[in-house]
Length: 63
Image 1 (spheres, one colour):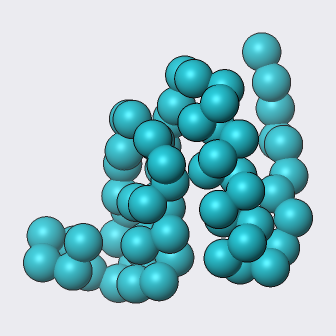
Image 2: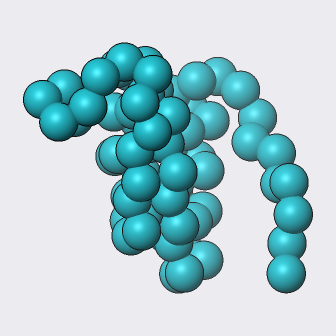
Image 3: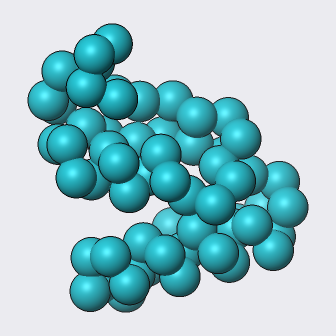
């Protein structure tokens, strides 16, 4: 994450997977934008992010 981007840059991940890119972005001061179609992976991503940050995730919209 550190080589191709700088602090404050946006990071796009179209396959959210386990959320490791989101956590890495948080750790290095990047803004992560990602998607994941599989709801099981979405649950994992949210749980990992909440555990890492100590904050509660908020659903902004749903379709």
